Image (cartoon, rainbow, N blue to C red; front, top):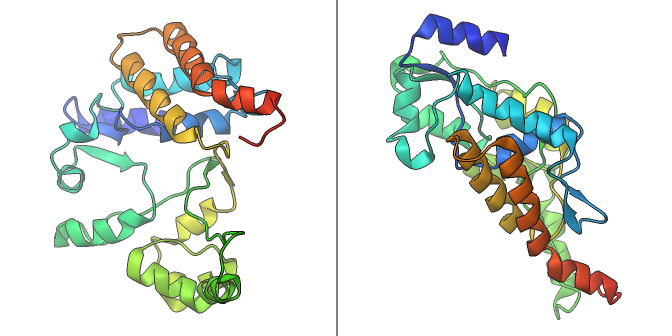
Length: 252
């Protein structure tokens, strides 16, 4: 926070220390996880956003806007993030490994070599996707062979080369395409300290509500208490069917 305040002092009123698009849910959740907050309670049946740990993290998130360290804008209000970064509109942008390639392609030549990646000072989200084998598949043996092939370190490294998606296997990081990439090293470090979001099918709807109420709070259309109370209420409604299924002894 002190470093961002210093950046703001040096950059002036029209420039910011960090860009945090206000229609994203990820950073409020990351800060909450770093504070040890549980997003849901009672076997993921109810929201837990009025918990003091989430409240503290949420209040800190809002302070970044209140103190002028981040602009209160959404993605749609930023014409070109890469151009704005190159122009010095903001100094820090919280993003994922897919943007390594984008920064390399979209930033001016004069900016190349003048930017770097860094891990967050604490936990981040364990994002990504999973390879799964259907229990009812008539081709389980062939599907399993495909999964084994895709999980090979050399194939994981090749996927990174093609798409920018990080490998799930640590052994793949020894491949030259990753080991020699200085921008990827921060993400390798961050992968040692990640936490998952609640493993429930309702999570995407819940995440959208977090983003919705966070934006209202940033725009000062709701207080912290009002936003978190409304968020818990909405999430409890979203999870109503889950509670019913659990009461019936069924799997949600």
